[in-house]
Image (cartoon, rainbow, N blue to C red):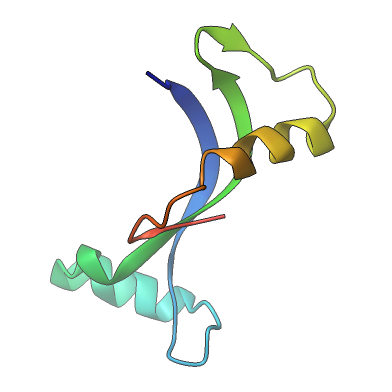
Length: 76
């Protein structure tokens, strides 16, 4: 089993792939959270081990490994 603390940001993404803060606000206000995507950009804890002190490049490599399968709503 994999347990992880992931740092990232919830975003609304336009059709052209660009994030939009105003669309994020509208989606939250209107309860359309299924339209949002979580962009993961750092991994701080994995399987009982704090890895926060490792270099960022090493943490990102481990984080990328967690995205070996496509997960709707989650992006690396």
